[in-house]
Length: 314
Image 1 (cartoon, helix red, strand yellow):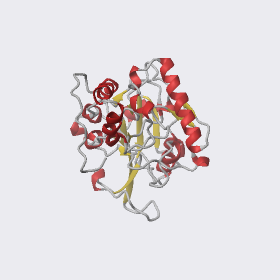
Image 2 (cartoon, one colour; image 1 turned 45 degrees about the horizontal axis):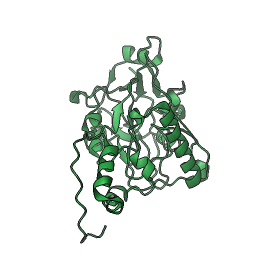
Image 3 (cartoon, helix red, strand yellow; image 1 turned 180 degrees about the vertical axis):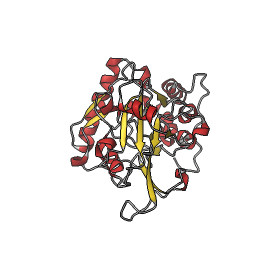
């Protein structure tokens, strides 16, 4: 829209913030098709790859199983047309009696960033930005404040007198990012994983500001990935190719972990520093670590109750 041209006034609609479809329908009825399209353009121009069907799609949690399948097939067709790759978009559900948790042994992490590289590939991140959900901080021995660490080191590792702390989404039991979202585009699933409906997200970045672990990522640009590098095994709420203008985050690779596999970052770790599993299972390795090691969580004083634990070997 030309800056000198006033934006058409939108009607006041007495619906809840989450009823975006109803709001847009009311706008269309009030303004007429041409004016409605003009009014809508500033809201969608940041996301040129988000078509009208996706923009008007109901919230993921409001969709019936049949509607979800139709959405998945549409996204698969769009990916094939856009990237020339056949992908499968799945929707694995949380398993009753499962609460996922992660632990990381800082005594044996060597700062190689293999975990971040695996995350980058597994989750179909934009290749131009080399994005990952994991940042690895180089820390001075004796300190545990990742805010004081260096995540941009480019020398051989490990370095004498240093230890390394990978930081990613902590999958908080009390996630401030969820309460910050004005339209319920992010929420916590029954197994503890915090997810984002990329098609519902409006890109306000309130969740990013609320997260004390800097675990949220914003797609400033339309992601570019060579066809041969696209991971075709995708989850709707996890590693499908995200649209420009949407927030995203680590999901503990739910498209893998809900199917009984380990997160990609864990499988890539050359030292075995990472431990993952169902903390409700008394026989799980993650439960043993929490019960037998001196674990700590980042920024415990904030009351977020992370499900991501760190520990050192005694």
